[in-house]
Amino acid sequence: MANLQNRKSRDGVVYSTADNFEYIFQPTDEDQETLKPSQQNLRVMLDKKQRAGKKVTLVTGFIGTEDDLKELGKKIKTKCGVGGTVKDGEIMIQGDFRDRVMELLLADGYKAKKAGG
Image (cartoon, rainbow, N blue to C red; front, side, top):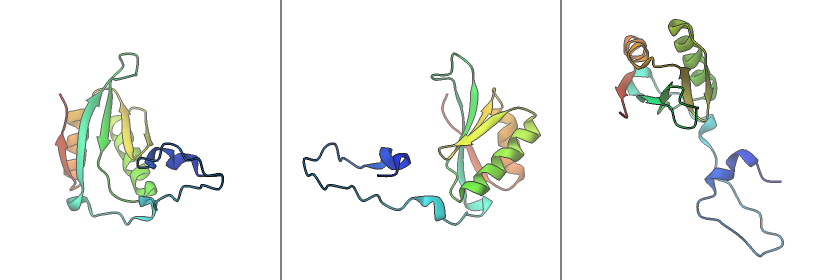
């Protein structure tokens, strides 16, 4: 059975009538080497879509391993003193902490920009 997590990356395949059809997934970026902080282009934005009106701060654009992303997420959550999660290549911080997250990322040498409204 195909990997269900890669279901979103089926690049245009909708349906096949072949009995023995099996989609060949492209390799994911999980084994990708983590770039240095100065080479990262991170986006920090505020989001409240599909969250019952609650705001979350999103950090996107991280290029590297899942473990390094989780480590960065843990560091941000600890410094802000709030909860959050790391999934789908994004760091979600509960609440509006865009300015604080920007300060933390810039202090660690990351290239970060505010995005969105």
